[in-house]
Length: 244
Image 1 (cartoon, rainbow, N blue to C red):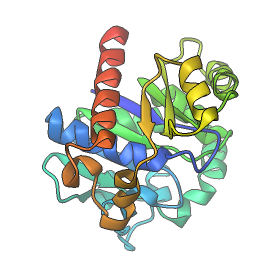
Image 2: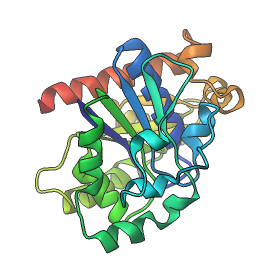
Image 3: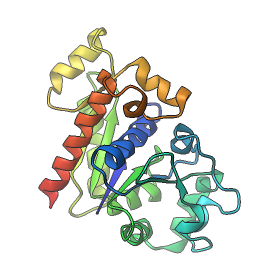
């Protein structure tokens, strides 16, 4: 079992699309029982799979034991892939976690879920607070989407520093250039500076994920975007192997 967090301190970098597509590769290509856990109150991961939160239970109530994971988890249209959706209640999650005083609450919940799932993909909110601290403690690997610019390396260093603050032995961290457009000079410079980082292209197929509410590997399996997500998933599995 492994918990993989897709985390950025900045919104609009392709984080949710990345998490949703990686979950599909985990379930469909690696054939692993996979849970996509949306921790972002915006609920983008559920939208990308065409699923709405069940109004009978709030996502935030899982943390204070008012609800169980079984009350919230939904099946997607794909074998071995389930979703734990987000809703507006997660806007108060930082306060709830701080009040509880349990620094590994998220890690404990993930451990409980690992009895059923081999891979848990966390779509994390772009915050620096108790939620991000709990993500660091729960994750076996952290994926950091970064916009392609000459400042990408510096931004990654800042994120790494924040991660190290919350874990004596932090999990492996994998930076990813997101929305890469090699027609643009700044993007080419960022790629030349970080040639070994995985990269996800700026592509219409990626944008179509939100329109079709399907992962790109499903509707455009031979596209450059699908190949890039597949290569990223391979890199993640390699990181997890190195950790082990």
